[in-house]
Length: 152
Image 1 (tube, rainbow, N blue to C red):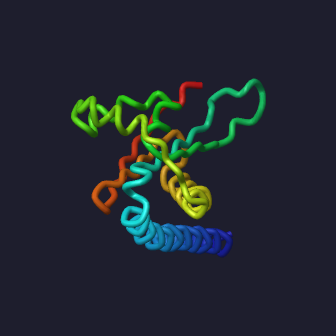
Image 2: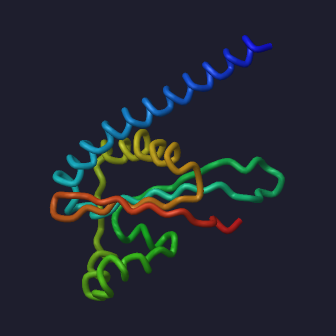
C-alpha cells in the first residue's frame, strides 16, 4: 500500500510540475505576442475582451464552460459593460462616445490568436466566471481581470 501511495504522490507532483511548465510556456508566448499586437494593431482595435462563464442551471443540460470574445469598445455594449469605460476614461464622455462608435476591422490572424491562444490561456488561468480586458494604448498594453457571477 505504501508503494501505491508513493507512486500516486509522485504522479501528482509530476502533473503539477507539467501544469506549471505549461502555464509558464504559454505566458512566455503570450506576452511578446500581445506586445506585437499592441504595436501593430493596438490603435485600430483598442481592446480585446474575453468573457468566460459557466451557468449554474441549464434546464437539465450539462452546465459547461463557455466563452465569448470581441474587439473594440463597442463590443462591451453587448454585455452591458460600458460602465468600465467611465472608470478607464475618467468620465470623458466625448472620448467614450468616440470609442463606442468606432468600427473595428480585425485581421483573421488576430481572431485566431484570441480563439486558439488567449481564450484557452485565460480559461486555464481563471477557470470560469471571469472578464478579461486587454487594453491597448500608445503601442503598449495592460490587462484587467475580474471575476463575476454570471447570474444563472
